[in-house]
Length: 346
Image 1 (cartoon, rainbow, N blue to C red):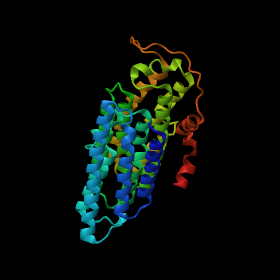
Image 2 (spheres, rainbow, N blue to C red):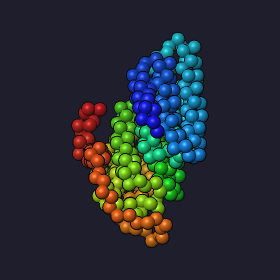
Image 3 (cartoon, one colour):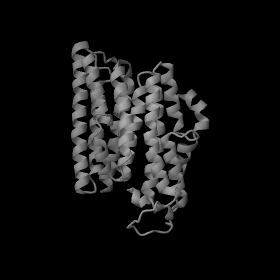
Image 4 (spheres, helix red, strand yellow):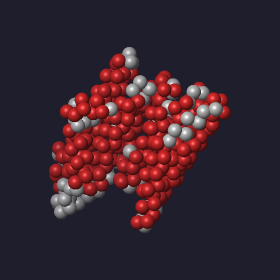
């Protein structure tokens, strides 16, 4: 890709995200979302592979439909109330349309079908952007209008997302698809709590982005795309694969690691809101996700499974692990002792 084109798309991504998260007016928020959508499409389709082109077209169609719904929702609300402020969404139809639009943008169930396919057609770095940066503006809109959303609808979509994300990830062999279903499952955790504690949703998103960035950057360093190649990647970078195992277990939410913090806080908050059944169900559904994270961890470090592989075993690579991976890997595993400080600052 031309360096100037890459610079323009990167700056446009930054600009679109900044406009959306800093705006109070619906039209400005919509403009930021559109700039973001148009900026990421060249990054998805840059390989010129048919699968990448298909992913870019799917992404464009879904995001265009979602943006139309955002515009439609804000126009109806302005028509009935005379307000274009993001925090003044009061009309019931507008609230319903906005919830649908943001669910499409994020990939919540039942609007999740595009997300695994788009991630599978993208490179690992673009998939990282789609899983983290591109979800920040819609979550910000959800955060600002959280007080006017329908609790029953959001809870239903959240539990369905946690269930489907865990269930569909069980049978996958492509790592990008596994991480796509992992993202859908985590979005279920974020959206179930947003009405009761919006700051906790943002904290969960930040920690999820940190852990996902660690996993994607490690996979990008070892050039691993599927389970059959992750089996033999330990010969190239043994320490990096051990780190990958810990990052995956953190993403699963196991107690000594960072990923346990948001799940613990969400279950605690749901119990305080007398939603014990929802808390129990979503905690049980996270065990599905734990299974495929453990499978990935098993494939990456513990031992070679008794399968024949067509890939040539490679020995150590000379390239040293870069500093950013070391920093974010440490943060994605060791932040749990700092949870009191994190809670105070949040």
